[in-house]
Structure formats: C-alpha cells, structure tokens
Length: 458
Ligand SMILES: Cc1ncc(COP(=O)(O)O)c(C=O)c1O
Image 1: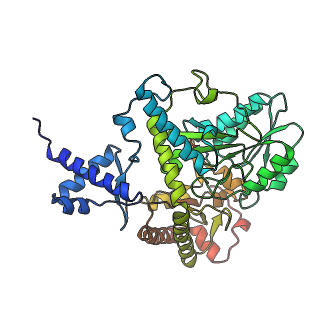
Image 2: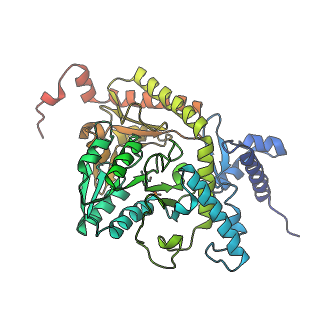
Image 3: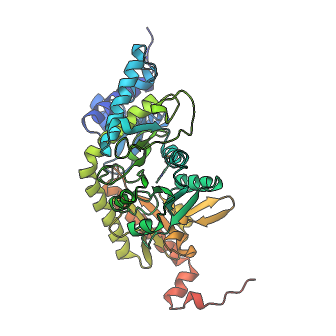
C-alpha cells in the first residue's frame, strides 16, 4: 500500500472541504484557518498546502476579511477533465453520449441567460471568435444583398479589426461616433443605414468605461429597416438583463471568463426565427455546431460556461445592487478627498462593477505602480515603445493628457467591503503623494493656466 505524504493528504482534505463549501454556497470562501481548525491540522502547513493548490490552478484566492480560497473550476466541469473523456460529436458510443448530454445542458443554461433557445447557441473559443464569426459570417452570407456594415468607434478590437479586415475586401463600414459618455444613439444608427446595409454591430456595454447602450432601441430601428443586428454582450451578460427577443437582437457574442467561467470558451447566439439568420462558416472541417463552427467541442470548458451562466443569472438580482453600492461608496469617498478627478463613461447608464476615473496631474502608470496590490488597468495601452492613450477615452473626448491619468477599477463577486476600504485609503494616499511631487499640480493650484505657459525645450 502506498502512503500519501503530508502535503498531499492535507491537499486532498482541503480540496474536499472547499468543494463541499462551494457546493452549498457558490460565493463562499474558505480560509486556511477554517480548514486547520476543522481537521486539527497544523496551520502553517495547511496555509502552504493551499498556496501550492493555488499554484496548480485548482483553487483561487481573494484577499480581505471575507476572502479566502475557492475552487477555480466549477464542480460540474471537473469530471469532464478527469473521468468523462468522450467527444460530444461521437454519437455511436456511450462516452460520446455523456459528453453530448453535458454540452446540451450547458447550451440550455447559456441560452436561458439571454432568453434564447438552445438550438440558437453556437459554442466557440471565446468572444473574439464569436465577433469574427458574426460579422464576417454575415458579411459573406449576405454580400449579394449589400456591402455596408455599421458599428461604433469604441467597440472591442475583435469587432473593429474584423470590420477593418472586411474593408480590405471591399465592404464599406460606418463607424458611428459616440457621445461624451460613450453611448451610441439609435438615431445615429438609423441615420447611417442605407439600402446597402446588411449588419449593425453595437456592443451592449463598453469594457473600458462601462457605458451601457440603448440596445432595445437600436434593435427596434434595425427591425424597422430590415437590417440584422449583432451585439457584443461580453460585458453586459450576467450584469444587466438581456433578452434577444425583447431587444430585437439577431446575433450576440458571449465569453465565459467574464462571468466567472473558464477561459477560452464562448458562444455566438444566432437567431433561428423571425428572421432565420444564416452565417457563413469562417472555419471549415467536420461541420460541428450546425455547420457554422467546425472543430471538436471543448467539453469541460463548455460545462463550466453553462454552470457560470446559470449562476450569473441566479445571482444577478442580488449581486449587482451589492456591487453597485460598493462602487458608489468607492467613488463617493474618492470625490470627498480628492479634487480634479473625473468620471469617464455614463454617470448612471453604466455597469455596476465599473469605475473609470481620470486623476489629473497623476500619471496612470505611476499610480498603478504605487498601489501594486490593487489589480487595475490604466487608460494607456502599451504599443511597442510608445504609450498610446486609450482609443475609447479619445473617442469620448478625453484629452491625451487626461487619458494618461485614467484608471479602470473593476469590482466583482468576490470583492468585499474591507477591500473597498483598503482601496479607498490606498488610492487617496498614492494620488496625494504623487501630486505632492508634481510641479504641474502645484502650478495649477497657484492658479496658473497651464495652457498659457510657453514651454521651451532644452
Ligand atoms: C467587450 C469585449 N468583447 C470581446 C472580448 C474578447 O473576448 P475573448 O477574450 O473571449 O476572446 C472582450 C474581452 O475581454 C471584451 O471585453
């Protein structure tokens, strides 16, 4: 008989404990202390064992008073890595049937989140692929009807670059501008539609500034004009209610990792009725997913995606108000202590979890370095050697200087009030420290109009 070493034994005990806890309460966390006390294990070794489990990717952690450890993968998807090896497309043996049944369940769970039917869900490798398939697939399929596509100037690159690639192939694309909050109006879309328009692609909510678009109004305009409507709903899914029928959506992109599911799996909703939408395949092969997306399905990923979609739907009504309250408290506290800070994106029509702020006179990258323990993003994108300001901020009229001072904070299911308190203290302290070192901030405070200064180069 073989004997487990201590770390392995503690690891198995810890995994079993964490799994049971997650089964009872999907948002619950487990601490090393709880496991050590429950099973009478030495705390130090238990804590180290949990750290090792985290490194393997089996569990993940969150800081703060309500923090601790939880399973990285949902309980439902684990058997499809370890026990059920079947290919969902193999219909002539039992292993295949088990995998197929699991995929079909996930298809229902994902469909339910957006008010669709399961036959309208095509699984993909993520939203980049879904956006490519939706836009290129429609363009190819309907090119006899017209060659004009409408999108907005602040879409995700997976939409913008797909449209640019189609321009190279002779399609015409209108990039409708957005207002100062990053919203696309239905009127602007309507005005851009021509007899040659075959597709409108407008995101449900923006990933950088969190602004939510009037999707139902845009859907209505598209229906009236007989134009297909695609929306990249990656950021909105699980955070705002989505219903493809009520909102007049014909194609919709999703990705699992934005709703706490696994990475590398996504879906494209393709309407089957009123009208029946057809999409030309961009990837050819065995004809999976009703011929629209060939390739063996990622069964464990899809099962995890299904579970994540089900949980996102269940938890949305309680989680979003909780997250919004924390976000608003965060923003209120920053405003109370700091001057010259500006909110980017819509003040009310925005995702509950997003806060994008410009801290004038503070370089975003320096701010990030000063508060390394907070995982935030800056308003600049590192492209080769230069720091480019975000195209989203540029398009809503944020000047280049201010764009470089911008930071996006995202709150989530595992964010606690204590972490928000910590972040408030840390941001205020770091911004004040950096401004104390900034001659520009000092000059501005002395009332000098920086635009009137005649800078000379030495
Ligand atoms: C709005 C939006 N669309 C598309 C994507 C791409 O998704 P994926 O990483 O699944 O390809 C993202 C990713 O973050 C996103 O935020």
